[in-house]
Length: 509
Image (cartoon, rainbow, N blue to C red; front, side):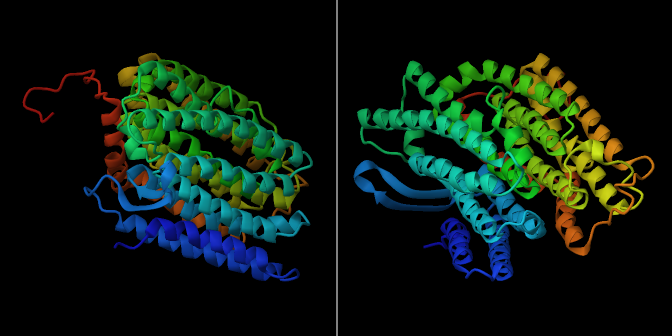
């Protein structure tokens, strides 16, 4: 029997959440240290598991399957392919960074920081479980359960409208989850009529579901995933949630948790409902293009830095969805890589903006200006994170954006052109943010800005290193992702379009 990597990665942070919550009142610093230690242990285990993932091996590895409610075909079924192991690694790496960034934020909020640290660990456990789940009901349970810790994270910590934002977040996602539950039950009925009722993903993928039924079930899943992602027009909860949450919490929400939506699209919706995916792909591509342009245009006009980054995420999620529903290897691999790269860049932006808010006490752009003079390292960090977010060549998001655009243009040329316009707009909103907050003469309000401290530099350093490493050398991760993408595309039964320019004679195709 092989080592149960995935169960271990789920149990360790869950157990850490319980232990952190049980730390007696008055020992908040001890609770924070315990939570950070558990997050670091989970990160190390995640890296070891990722390294242990065998390239060119079995498509699904670290398989675990135990009967849960066998009479109903429910299993504790876990496994990792190239798509899920990439997102599990992202979750493991980002969590200790977010906890370290929150080290002072909770104290600034004058609230007990212990619940925040315990809830983040619990959320990490659920996220890893969702990315690893190979039983559709298990995935659904985790998909819904993760709303609870995030609801409290938003509602307990953040701005004056945090309770409104938390309720809006919960209601939107609960609605999507209820519709998805109906689709999950419909899948079970289909399995029961064709042999034995089961929720195992591999068995459900093998079903012969009539096309008209696929349409309804596909729409049920996609509705929930489009809200979680979020995709226009189901996006309106994210700007409110990101603006009212603490920057560290907003980083985790946009950088990690929202990836469950796009992961569900490529890992569940496509292989379960291949005919429906092909039929609805053009419509979803249109929604993705609208998300790209809408998010970018609204980001340009924002005066609230956190809302600005939230709208950039809506634009970037549009690019991810666009790559998925281009239904070819370049687009799907680029979209999956983009999930990882967007997570790193967005977390970096939110964390650095959080440092600025702690110093100035404001999240509004107009309250800054000239901060680069007293705080050059802070300014350089913001510029670096912004350039990564806009896809500067040499930084990680560029590779994924390029693959998404190549994949899209080869199948939907107009969509590819319009998506490129969204990337041009990204340069505008990022550079305007930097210019208005960092350049020019220092104002009275920013003249005494302290530069990044040691702890803050330690938080930013791994994000900078990963964005550079994946920018210059993405091949190892792309190889792993490609092995996960190919079986999905095989289920959808689509091939890559013919090259727009034929290969010259004598060249290797």
